[in-house]
Image (cartoon, rainbow, N blue to C red; front, side, top):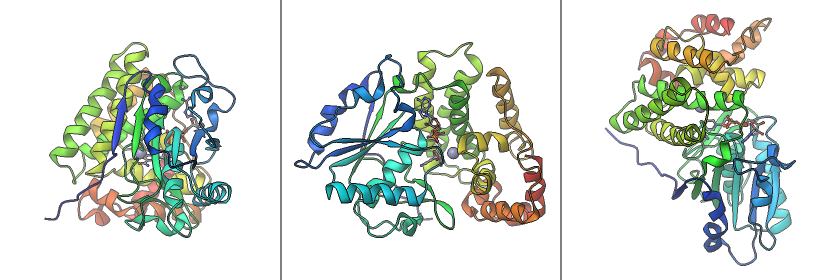
Length: 364
Ligand code: NAD
Ligand code: ZN
């Protein structure tokens, strides 16, 4: 057996107000007058504040030629968007000292990809796959303002390209530094917080119920699951402790899938996202709602969480789709081979037939 030797994030800072240390964290990584580029989720453009009540943009430690670019995450990141941002930076500055992503999973992924495309030639679409990236990117920092995706710890950046939705999975992809400040997720709207939080819960179920599981993944997965259960089921109202726990759940859930894989919910939700543009968090929830046959206990608990937190999960999103559209989703989904193998074992193709998957999509 050959074991994976995976690269992790280089530095982690955690704690309320740790964002205030960003200036000193960046200082040793500044190269001459090459600027730091802050890629900030466009949600913060109009002065939205985080837990301390101050607009986040006013707290970005700009120096010299540093620049804030607001990341438009109306749609999940595309290779064209990454290429455009990298070109813009090369044209304007030649080189930059670093890229700092501040936002949800989409902004974090954009920051990772732009950092890589500052040093790797061609288009980011050329690197969608496994271990295709050849050069380290520029210094990159991830600062989540939503927690759940695990994008802060993963070795991928999920991008929609001309022919597929696939990550740039490589040892060069993880962040050089992450700043985990629970204050930054404190003001997230209830629904968005739930959808992104459930991404983490679903990562745990898919990892813990998967055939790839080992003790490394299990230890992180169980911890993340406990944290999710505590905040989404046991607590009566959301408070600071929930922000702290959700932030660590996302981290541990991400660490769990790093050494295993996700499963059915993700494989099916990728099809929705590719065809209908359904966002990752809500898409996973829409699918999870119908996965009793695969994850009976997890789905029952998920439904309790939905009810307790008074969330509406959309239904009927595949109504009226054509055969061709169903086929597109089925093709995208069945293309996620490692996810199916993790979920259903080596013989997954005999279990998850096209007809069965079509029937599942029709229920959504
Ligand atoms: P998101 O980043 O797509 O953001 C969702 C919405 O919330 C956006 O409108 C954004 O502007 C807004 N937002 C961000 N922070 C906010 C805040 N504090 N308050 C209010 N609104 C805020 O959502 P997400 O669920 O964090 O991320 C999903 C993305 O993550 C997808 O693109 C998915 O592909 C990616 N992802 C990546 C990995 C990975 O390992 N790289 C894993 C899972 C998901
Ligand atoms: Zn996910």
